[in-house]
Every structure is written in structure tokens, then in C-alpha cells.
Amino acid sequence: MDATFRRLVAACFLNQLGFQAAYFVGIIGCATYVLDAGAAEVSALVFVMNVVMLVGYSAAGALIDAVGPKIVLVASLALPLVAAAVVLAMPVCMASLLVVAIVMGLAGAAASTAVETFPRYLTNDEVLLARMNSLNSVVTFVAVIAGPLLAGAIAGVTDNRLVFAVLPVTSVLGVLVALCLCERVRPEHPQDSRQTTSSLLARVADGVRATVASPALIVLFAVCFLGNLGFGAFDSLESLFYRDVLRVGAEWMGWLTAIVGVGATVGSLLAGRVPTRRV
Image (cartoon, rainbow, N blue to C red; front, side, top):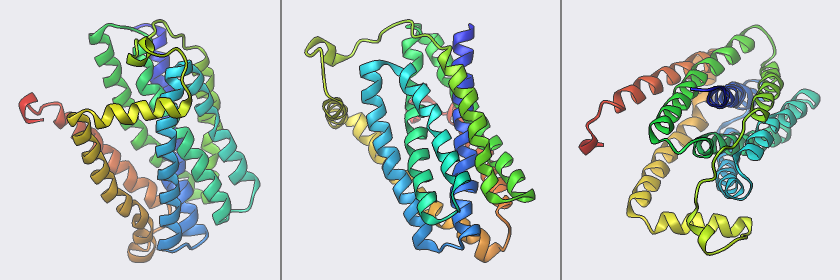
């Protein structure tokens, strides 16, 4: 595997490391422990961030079709610098956390989409594509463990807000790595044969129509929707349980979220052993 593929794996790790460190212990942790927010305020943050991520995923896919993944990846890796500037320059309040949640949701969704799409712009080798996807999944799970551990360590010894100091490091390093990536092939898109130009909204609509037209994609969409519906409710209340029931500090949000990453890693390894006919 050459340097370009290794750089993509590194960009994936840096993106996830910054996001995982800043999201739960940073955004939700500051709302819960610094602002003493209740369920309504925390739920509002989670809701807004997830709506923005939905927009980010849809828009990023269309933009990648139009301009390729490199530009989208570089821009989305740079966006967390804005979030860090907002939270470190302003007093912590719901308004500033809301801005940070919007920026991080947009950046995280766009960067993830670009990383997942990029291998198709590097090779047509199906074996290599499968290996790239596997490596990106592995480093994502590693980041889900490492990011909260890092954030928990910071929150345990200093101000919760300083968790966001991780973002400039991961963003700058990520942008530098992404700038070194080179697109080698251009995947064929079904719409290429019938239209040469298309608006962003038209491309998003194409994606929606393709999903609705496929029974398999509809099932996957429903499974993802229902799974995330349950997790969204859990995500909104988890930090309040730490604070009000367990009565532990914000650092425990990092420790226990890292355990989630361990569980995700084990689950992914077990899923790979499920016979194809039972998937």
C-alpha cells in the first residue's frame, strides 16, 4: 500500500480523533457540567447537531460528485478551527455551544463522506478497495477509543473547555495530510451520461431517488434510522445520568465513551464472522 493510501487512513484518524474528543466530553460535557443544563437543553444540542449532520452528508455527497473528494475533505478538516476559535474566544454559553455543534456536525459529516468516498478515486482494484475500507474502519474505532480517553484526561485535570484545544492540532495536521492526496481515477456516475451540469439540490435529489428506487437501500435506511433514533435519545440523557445519578465528573464521560469504542471494535470483528446468508 503506497503513501497516498496511508495518508488517507491518517486523514480519517485525525478527523475522527478531533470529532470524538470534542463532541461528547466537549460540547455535551460543557453543557452538562459547566452550564448545568437540563434534558431539554442537551437534547436541543443533540437534535441540532444531528440535523446539521444530515444536511452535511447529503451536501457532501453531491459536492464530491461535482468537484471530487479532495476539496471537500480539505475544507471539512479545516472547519473545526472555526469551532475551536468560537469556544475558546467566547464565554461558554448555550449560544456558543450551539454554533460549535453546527460547525462540528457539518465538518464531521462532510469529512466522513469524503474519506469513505475517496478510495474510489484512487483505484479500481476491488481487493484494494476492500482493504482500504477495512483500514478506515479500524482507525475510526481506534479514534472512538483514543478521542474520549484524551478528552477525559484533559477534563480530569483542567477546565472542560480546554478539550477543544485538540481541534487545532487535528485540523492543521489533517489539512496538511489531505493536501498531499491525489485523485487518480474518476468513477463513473449514472447521471454523467444524461447531464453534464447539475445543481447541488439536483444531485441530492438524485441520491434520494436512487435510495427510494432500491428495496435494499430502503431497508438499510430504515435500520439506520431506527438504530439512530434510539441512540439519539440515549445520547441526550447519558451525560445527565453521569452527573445526577452516578455523581461523577466530566472525565467519566471520556472513560465510558472509550469503552463504547472497545465494544464497537469487538462488534465489528464479530460481524465479519457472520455467514453471508445470515447478514
